[in-house]
Length: 83
Image (tube, rainbow, N blue to C red; front, side, top):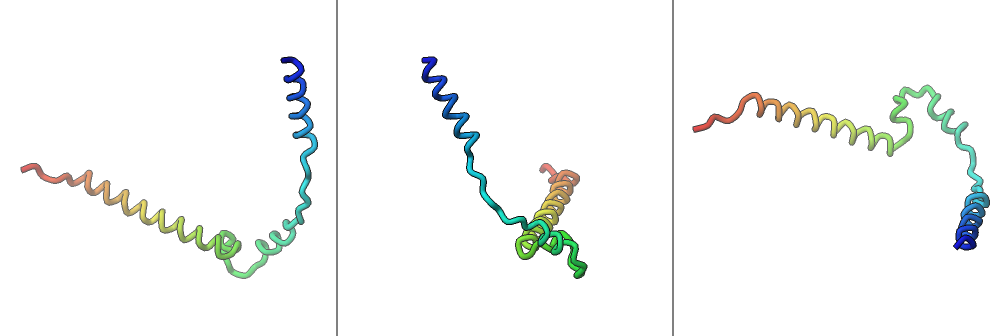
C-alpha cells in the first residue's frame, strides 16, 4: 500500500514538474499600438468585428431587459380588475 502511494506521489510530481513550455509570440506591443492609435474609434470597439458584435449584443440585451422591467412594473402598478 505504501509502495503504491509513493509511486503515485512520484508520478504526480514528475507530471507537474516536467510540463512542456509552449513558446508563444509576444503580441503585447502590437496590441498596444492598436489600442493607443488615435483613429476616432472607441477603445471598446478597437478589437474588431468580435468586439462590435459583443457590444451590439450587450446593448440589445440591456435595452430589452430595461423594456421588460418597465413592462413588469407597469403590470404590477396597474393590476387587472377582478369581476
